[in-house]
Image (tube, rainbow, N blue to C red):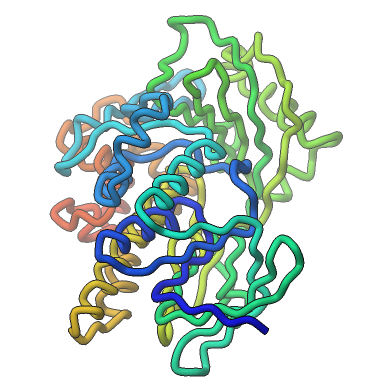
Amino acid sequence: MKTEHTEILIMGAGPAGSVAAGLLRQQGRQVLLIEKEQFPRFSIGESLLPQSMTYIEEAGYLQDVVEAGFQYKNGAAFQRGDKYTTFDFRDKFSRGWGTTYQVQRATFDEVLAKAAAKAGAEVRYQHKVEAVDICGEQPLVHVRSPEGELYQISAKFLLDASGFGRILPRLLDLETPSNFPVRGAYFTHIQDNIPAGSFDRSKILVSVHPKHVDVWFWTIPFSNGRCSQGVVARTEFLNRYQGTEQERLQAIIAEVPTLSNLLRQAVWDTPARQLTGYAANVTSLVGRNFALLGNAGEFLDPVFSSGVTIAVKSASLAAAAIAREWAGETVDWQADYATPLKRGVDAFRAFVESWYAGGFQDVIFHPHPSDEVRRMISAILAGYAWDTKNPYVAEPGRLKTLEQLCAV
C-alpha cells in the first residue's frame, strides 16, 4: 500500500478545516486537507455569528467571503405570539465584529476551501477515511480515493474537522452521550416571496411555537430572495405529524400564525430534510498527536447558530497550539486547547438549556429590559462566549438569577 507523508493532515474541508488550513499555512506548515464529499455540497448552519469573522479574517479569507455576495447580517429577531424583540449585534458588551453574513453553506464552504487551496493547502475531494492508527510515533490514516484505491497518510499531527461525520470519535471510541434530550429538525430552502418592508432580512428570525416553548423555528434569509426554513423539537413532538418531511414542516408552521402569515406566498420548491439526535459529546477533545475541531468534538444545538463560530474558534486555538509546539515549546493540549474551547461552549450551553426551559425566553421578551444586561446578552448571541469580562461568560450561573428576576 502506498504511503504518503505530510506535516498536518486535516480531515474535513468545512469551516473548521479550511480556517485551520489557512492559519497553518501562514506558519509555513505543509497541510493536506481530505474531504469525503465533492464541493459544493448541501449543509445547514447558515446564519453566522460576528465573532466568526475574527477567525475568517485571521485565516486571510476575509476578502473571499466579502466578495462572495452573501446576505448581510447585523442581529437576531425573536417572536413569541405577539411579543417581538430584536438584538443588534453592533450594540454589544464585547469589542469586535458586530456584523456578519447569512450564507448558503454549499457556496460558503466552497469559498473557504478554495481560499485554503489558494493559501497553499492541498485539498482532495471524495477521499474517505477508513481507518486511523495512533499507536505509532505518528498518526497513520487509511484513505480510499474516488477511484477505489486504498492508501496511507502519515502525519505529524492530525486534526479532525469532519463535523457530524465525527471520524475520530467513531474510529477511536471517543463518543459519549450528550446530556441534551433527543431533538430533531425538519428543514428546507424556499423561495420566500416575503413582501418588501415586512421582514428585516439583515437578521435571523427565531419564532417560538405558541403552545410549546421548547419548539422553535428558524427563518434565515439569503441574498437571492430565498431563505432557509426549519423547525426544531423533541422527536416525540415531530412524530405526531404525518406525511413527508415537507408536509410535516408545513403543518407545524401552520400552527404559528405570525410565521405562517410571513410565508404565505412562499414557493416550497425543495424537498425538506430531517436531522435527528444531532447533539453529541466526546470523552476527550485531544489525544496523542491529534485534536478534534468544532462539531467533531461537541455539538450543542442550532438555536443560537453557534456551530460555525465554535468550529472556527477551535481552528484558531489548535493552530496557535501547533505553532508553539513547532517552535519547541511544551504544549499542554488539555490546558491550552480543550479547556479554553470548552469555556465558551459551556457559556453557550447555559443559554441553550435556559432557552428550552423557557427562562431565557422570559429574559429576552421582558418588557422593561436593562440596557446593560441586553448588551451583555447581545455579545453572547453575537458569538463572544469567550469574553470572560462579560459576567454571563465568567459565571454562566448568573443567568439563573436573571431568569428569576424577569419571571417576577
